[in-house]
Length: 323
Length: 222
Image 1 (tube, rainbow over the protein chains, first blue to last red):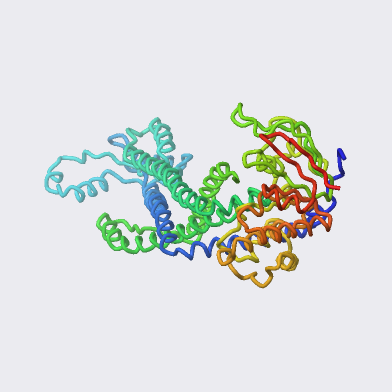
Image 2: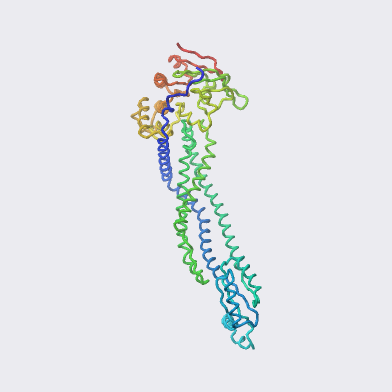
């Protein structure tokens, strides 16, 4: 007997239909999801500790992200107050100043323009500095008339471009814009964003390591089981599945804990933050995660848990060879 | 059913665990594999289970060169052979029933069908009344019978056993062997590695004798 036809008995004839395979695949997923959840619940304390470690790793980047979100709100408020002051030439006044104001308002990129005459400027100056007496003694008003312009686009580069164009207009002496602090704020925000992203990557790796290590121990504990099921025809996907679910559960639990701790921490910080903001005359509150934010957090944490488990199981499956 | 063609297995570049193996086993045949420990019985079975691959030659099972199976196909190959281990390889954290149903679970069998077949296999080895027990509550002979039930629950065309009576007393050993003969009688190809020569001689089946990795005798029994 040299070559035989493939066996027509045994497993070959029992291969289920594709619909049946799909059902059995779903059935195994459901069974493994429940089984791995039960395994977690069987050791509630150690499961909780793992989830807490994940939560702590998630809180820092998520918290920073929330803070940046709040800062972005301030940022837009400040952007709205970005204005240019156009000083008119000395001696330009009255009707001519009004014409220049209209011309400025008609410029492209200008939302509105407001004329401050020399006399109005003097009053504002006196009020701001409290030097009424000294200034009143001056023989004539040394201040030029000025036009305060609100630009369409408050970004520093656009404002700079606009200012350059205005300076050449007749009757305009100088255009002043305080861009340095705007730019500095923009750079700070960029720094915060990058630091947040870097931290998110770093702590995401942390979550992978925490889950990976936990799953590695679980794999070691079930080594004999893995060997046996491999011997009797389990695929790698079959062996991996319960561990992937464990990882996903750890991630989900960690994400939920992180969300809880974040909202508790937000409440705890709300009062001092509000007081601090009020002292600067700003209305600023730490934003909450919200529905979308919570969903993102849970999605990311679950995915990280799953991925950590996948890496750990794949690495160890290669090492586990049935004896 | 099985064909070994000039098969050799060398470990570490020097040591020949198996050399020049050339034999065939017909479908439905029952074969004993004997020899001292270290003669290569386990290595041969490991090759058949494709836990290892031959260094030379090729092994055909049901007409397929098993060395050429892609590693993703290996699980499906293993599902077609039932294996009984000397140390049973049962899972101690689940019941006898779940141990026996495990191969069906792995294959994704429909639960009701799986239950029916697992119970039938347990009934065959006479342990249906212990289906809810844990393996630890069973004696060595009973554990081995659970291992056999698990190996046959799939109705495999090929049944392999590595020293299935290793730690059992003569009466239990004879009981286990008669179970293998039952499967042989219904058409399963059976290969049993054992060094229990007295028992083998009494059972009168074809016997392959290995010595230092070579096939030194192939005794057909008329």
